[in-house]
Image (tube, rainbow, N blue to C red; front, top):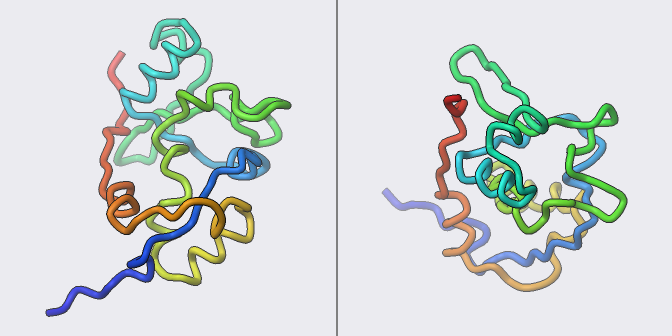
Length: 147
């Protein structure tokens, strides 16, 4: 059986323009790993416990609970401000991995669809197939962290 060659065999162009379109306006979840929690807390110079209490919520899917960042009432990320992401250098894995998410890489049409709302898609440096697959294969433990 032959494994199909992905449409991104020759790589894909992407460069974050820091437009914040992926961080604003729409409801959603930004799931945190233990590493994300540690990095964000350190960035804000507070304890992980204080960070969880102040900036996170638990999302209960019935079969698993996950830790997610809070959103503002208008659905913007809690860390989005007038000058963009206030924790950009310590942003969670989920944010760093965008737009190299499985749903955006299923086929060329999915990638181009994501590009309609992300001005960084199809511009900037070319990310190789290996780099893209490393984003796809990256695994983090996003289950609810113990107190």
